[in-house]
Length: 239
Ligand SMILES: [Zn+2]
Image (tube, rainbow, N blue to C red):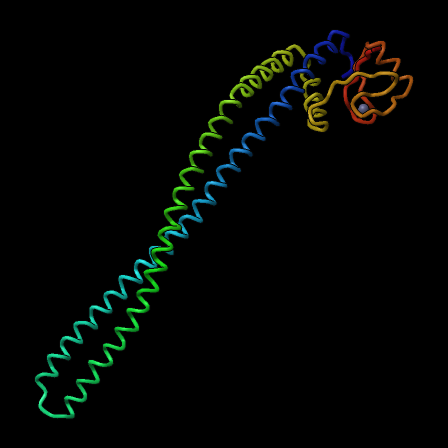
């Protein structure tokens, strides 16, 4: 595998330049995706809160309507009982009818008190829903704008990434397939840093000393040498 000429190391250095940018830009773009998801989640969460408040309001509206209906039924009953009151013949019947009217009125009073409470609650909830809706519209507008900005900023990075990917592919075609496989493996192991210089017998990838004999071989540059510690491909730089 190591029968690679000195020219290859120059290609590998260029390949590393592209790889470094690819790793950097990929991370930037991933962060952007994450940011967009986060913004979306914020909106969805707010939406859920709004929906919950709207449901509470709908239920209160229904409760009010039901109570109004019940009161109306009682009203009818009171009217009927009053009519009946005028028709009754015996005192016993009269007393019975009177009590019926009385009961209905008491029941109606209680329902009306309850209705007032429900209406207060309904009106307060309506205000909350209206305010929340306004807040939601503002938030939605803000988030849409933020996402547009993110999209705009990331399109440059995406273009750049495509460029470096193409450059990597171009260089890759001029290199041995096995060497590219090795490059890919070491890149995965080392977060994209594969080809590193050696200075004063120290690997600039893992900052460990390499054996003197190996250092001489790297300096000579006849074959590709890997760092015994981190497996990165080494090249010599005296500065
Ligand atoms: Zn190393």
